[in-house]
Image (cartoon, rainbow, N blue to C red; front, side, top):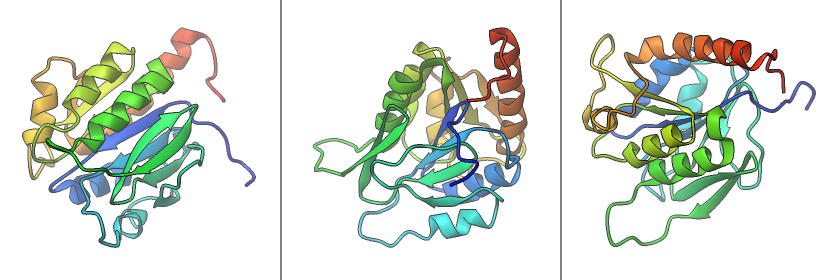
Length: 205
C-alpha cells in the first residue's frame, strides 16, 4: 500500500485483566502519525473469537487488526496478537506460533518483549498496562538491557483495574516512565524527538 513505511520504534504493549479499558485510553491519547508500530499482546483465551481489534479500532484513526504470521510491522498501525498464538519479532516481521502446553504460567508478553528487545535494541519500547500476575516483568528487563525504553501504567490518573502486572514491572527498578495511561503517548513522542535529535537524524525510515 502507498505510504507504508518501517516504524521508527516498535512498541510492545502488554495487557491482561482490565486491559481493554487501558488499551482504549492509550490509543485515544495517541496521535495517528507518530511513526511507531504497535503490537498488543494480551491474555485472551484461546478458542474465543476476539473482538479486540474492532473494539480498539473505535479509539484510534490508525488501522487496528489481528496480527498475521509473516507480516512486517509498519508505522502507524496496531497489531493485535490473536488468542491462542504466541508472537515473536524477527527482522521487523511478526512470527506467530500456536500456544503450546506449559508446565508453569504462560507468559506471552515476556516472550514477545524479549524478542522485541533482541530484534530492535534501542528502538524497542515496552509498555505494561493493567493486568494480574507478573507477565511482562522479564520482558521489561530485556528491553531495558537492550537500550530500549520501558513504561508501566501507574495508579495516578486512570488507574489500572488490576495493578499487579505493572507494579511487578515497576518493582524491578527498570521502568523508565511509570505513568498514568493517558500521559504515556505524549512522553513517547517526546522521547522519539529527543532520540532523533541525539542521533542527528530526522528519523524517517
